[in-house]
Length: 375
Image 1: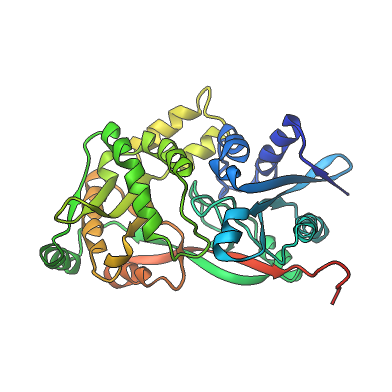
Image 2: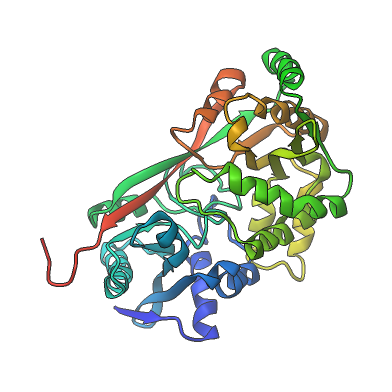
């Protein structure tokens, strides 16, 4: 077995395409778009403050695994930690291959004076993170990774321990619950907060940057999150608002017109990405356009309110609006984004809606022993 660092475009394409071969017989895997993966790996604005290296594992010239090592210098400085991340981790059913790939990242971390390896995660909290540990029988959403059942066993065998778990919920779309209707009326009157929507994508993009600056404040205490830079915000806005459906995006405003909350949803594109099989052209884009407008499922990507409104209940307002939009669009099921298992906001799904846990994903960490220490 050889561990080879990605140094050229040919290796980079192999790095991106390997999972499609690994999961070619798995009906639950959703391949990302190759060009977008390459762009993310080479042009993401977080590379201004992240250092990354990529490796392939090969046996007899055949790729059998891949991994990225990431040092987020800004995260380490803001959080006062000495961490290296591993991400883009995929491997055949072979413990030794997994061990060699992770050991390569660990060694690079030691060489840089770091004391902890953590992951899976990428450059920022706005990207894919965490490893699937439950829900292997479900098709992944396009913003979350899928992995085989042996992955968690491999990392546990190598001494990695749970840091946090994320849960996604599957929610049955029905009429707005009476309790939500009543709460929305009371909270809107008491808080003077109202829901605002925009009728065009042009207007959505105009408020996009403010939208994500609100997110910076809303998510400041969330695990693994550091505020997005202006360049990152523009990257996210350009990558999402171009395909947004206006009635699936809303903001909460106080009586002065200040943004205090956000929500962003999108029809599920999992099936479209599976049909595209890594390529938007020549025909992949047709599947995406079709599923944007003909779909039974919707993904709830982002919701958040400013910290000073965290316990005010104003999030009920966009729950009501989204529920009405889902019904109008004919969706049958809504899927939440990954939410930390101890997030109190999870209770809304079990208390007011017909829902069930859909997937559980885990972030791991492990102490990196210094050179010469093998205890």
